[in-house]
Amino acid sequence: MTLLAIESSCDETSASVLTDGHIRSNIIAAQLIHERYGGVVPELASRAHQQHIVLVVEQALAEAKVAKTDLSAIAFTRGPGLLGSLLVGASFAKAFALGLNIPLIEVNHMQAHVLAHFIKDTPEQNVPEFPFLCLTVSGGHTQLVRVDGPLDMHVIGQTQDDAVGEAFDKSAKLLGLPYPGGPLIDKYAKLGNPMAYPFPLTDMPDLDFSFSGIKTAIMYFLRDNTRRNSTFVADNLNDICASIQHTLIQMLLKKLTKAVRETGIRQIAIAGGVSANSGLRNSLLALGAEHGWQVFIPKFEYCTDNAAMIAMAGYVKFQQNEFVGQDVSPLPRMEL
Ligand code: KG4
Ligand code: ZN
Image (cartoon, rainbow, N blue to C red):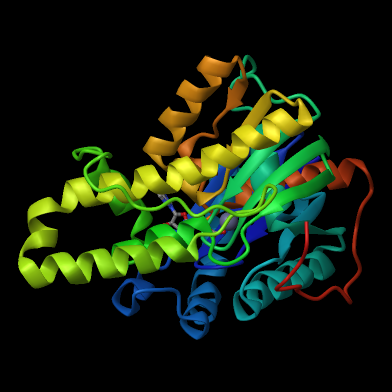
C-alpha cells in the first residue's frame, strides 16, 4: 500500500509518501515569515500553507516516484494545532481523497510525534517495545505519555501552563534572539557554562510540569543585570543560554525519573521539536546509562514537525481500517 500524508498544524507545510511502512519522501516547507513577528501569526501561517501545499505534495510524490493514481489512502493532521492551518491540510486531503476515490485517515499530531519512533530508515534500527514512556516536548505541548500500544496512549503528566518549547522561545525572545529561539539557545549553550546562573526549578504535584515561572525569573534576572551593565547579555550570552537550557532540562528529567519510578517502565523515548535539543539528548542518554534504561531518540528530521510521522500514524490506522468520512473537520484542541 502507498499512502500520502499531509501535516499543516502550525508553521510547517509538509507532505510524505510511505509504502508498506517505509518512508519514501518527506518534504518540509518552513515558514520564515514569522521570524520578524517573534512568533507564529496564525493568519499568515494559514496563507503560507495555501501557497505551499500543492508544490510540497507534488515534490513528495515526485521524489518518491509515485503517481497520484498509485495512492491507496491519504492521511492528514486533524489536530491539535491552529484552526486556520489545520483547515488547509484537511481541505486539501479531503478533496484529494474525493477526487481519487481513496480512503481518508485522520491523525492526531501528538500521537504521530510518538509514532515517529517506528520509522525505520535501516532494517537494523531498534524500535521501542510496548509499554514505553514517551516525553513529548514541543512548542505547544509537554506531556509524559505511557504508550501501551500504537494507538493506545495515556497522558500521565503534562504542563499546567507553558510548553517547554514555549519556555525556550520566550527566554530567547527576552535575550533579543529571533523566533524560534529554541535552536539558538541550544547553539549558544554548547559554548557556555550551565552552572553559571542558577535559576529556580519550579515543581508541580505528581507528574505535571510548569514552565511559566522560569520566564519571569529570567526577565527579572536580565532587568537587574542589564541595569548594572548594559552589555551584560552580549558579554555572557553563552553562559546565560547554557544556564536556561540546563534548568529546563533538569525540570523535564526530574519528572521523567519520577515517572520511571512510579510505572516501573524502563524504555524511554523523547519526541517533538524540543527533542532535537542536544543538551536534552545528551543528558537523557547519560541518565539512561546511569539507571540502565533503554533510551530512544528520534533522528533530527523526525523531531520537529514533519509529515513522515503523520504517514507512520496513518499506516497504523490503515492496517486497522480506521478511516473517516468527508464530514470530518479539524480539532484544534484534539486530545491524545
Ligand atoms: O514539534 P514542533 O516542531 O512544533 C510543535 O508541534 O510545536 O516543536 C517546535 C518547538 C519550538 O518551540 C522550537 O523552539 C523547539 O521546538 N525546538 C528546540 C530545538 N529545536 C526545535 N528547542 C530547543 N532546542 C532545539 N534544538
Ligand atoms: Zn509538533
